[in-house]
Amino acid sequence: SPDSNDSSTPELEKAGLLNKTKIAEGGRKLRKNWNPSWVVLVGNSLVFFKDPKSQTPSSWKPGNSCPESSVDLRGAQLQWANDLSSKKNVFKLRTVTGNEFLLQSETDSLIREWFSTIQSVIDRLNRE
Ligand code: I3P
Image 1 (cartoon, rainbow, N blue to C red):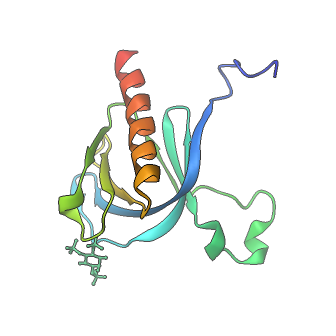
Image 2 (cartoon, protein in one colour):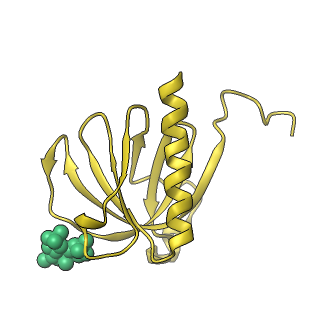
């Protein structure tokens, strides 16, 4: 399309369902609370939405797809973290502000794709 290189329209890199828990906020440890999350990697951000399957029909109204939270990937760190959970296929994302998230999928190939795609965005931002 003619607008595909418009720098004001960040490129959608990836979207899908992952299990997510936040484990630290500003460096302070939080109690784990795993939940399915619709995760969207767009531009320099990872954006979290409520699991569409857990939403009521009324929450499908246009304009109600408000993100739960958004993570700036600039300066973020990504590492495999199977030692931090009894679940398999877990990685940790740490932001410069000291927020930490675990992301997980039962599907090996899927979690590897997410890891490498997020890492490539972090690497790109580090080169800027
Ligand atoms: C936690 C819950 C989490 C688990 C966590 C438990 O218990 O079972 O799923 O993390 O383990 O403490 P609660 O619901 O009572 O808070 P994983 O599934 O990632 O293992 P942890 O304390 O060893 O992190």
